[in-house]
Length: 144
Length: 314
Image 1 (cartoon, chains in turn orange, green):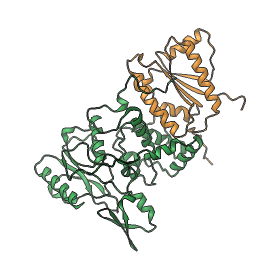
Image 2: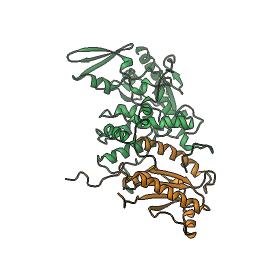
Image 3: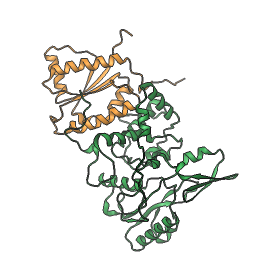
């Protein structure tokens, strides 16, 4: 499938990674257009439901990015998020999602370059895995 | 067993007579074999219906949620751990409770026994370590250790961790159990194998939510499966909806599950739904050194953090 491009949903923290995406844009840094950004107030706001909904509706990859541990705008949101992520990623991979579909990263609002780098990396990993096959809800699959 | 029952009735009667509690939550004989049912007793005369045997697998902590009256509850090891979880989560207050601790030697697996025989089982009795299964045509004696619930076979907290009175001397804890054998077996699988394994596991699921209802941890006023704006989960028996349901149900129990086996016991299709929560239990133990329901002081793992926690972020 040479022309296939992955769809990646990126949940970016308003206070850091979202700003980093802005900065990357301002600096005219190139990063893939596969990434569809959703702004969240803090990674602590992330619910596993969001990730599952993204996969269920056909995302090939999900990327969640927040402030470096210790730099949370709300003091400790990303620490809680980190524990949730770790358990959730392990669980979802235990159930048969390929490692590499779900990504987490820590990017501060000054790291535009890093944002572009990680965006490239995430896109490449997901592209190499090919289209998502598991956890996608096939609408009307059984309607006769 | 008889000694247990006499003692349970004696304590319950005393508490009700003295007015120390408004009711006793315990077990009475069910209408079907291997299905003892929870009962609420609020008069001293009622205590004669209380029983105890190896069919008391239901987790009674489930009936304490948001109760306001004074309650005596009969609690085996896992129930007591769930009571601790309930207290930590402010679902019930410690001083409301009189916990009658029952040292437990494991519950028997009703699915396993039912699947061993083709005929309908009409009675299951116990004599020490022997389980006697009767149908209209035959009577069979089985070793209890062979028909234990899987979670009981690997249980390492048979004695209640919190109690006001014990009905018997504590039993010996099992030490040489391999608690995570089944989880490791799946962890070693390849991606495709894992998918096939879980697809097969969940194919009989009818989304009856019995696993959720039997679980003392599931007390949200609106469960995510019932949410409609936004609707996170379809109502159908679409395989992805089913998988997502089990995944999220398990995740909600992360760091709270005590592996009491109530979910698996409740499943009418006999699905091993514990396999999901077991993985989280293993991770919580290995990553955060956490076993739920052992202490009233410690905060559960998803309600706290350490700056040097394991990090999967790039």
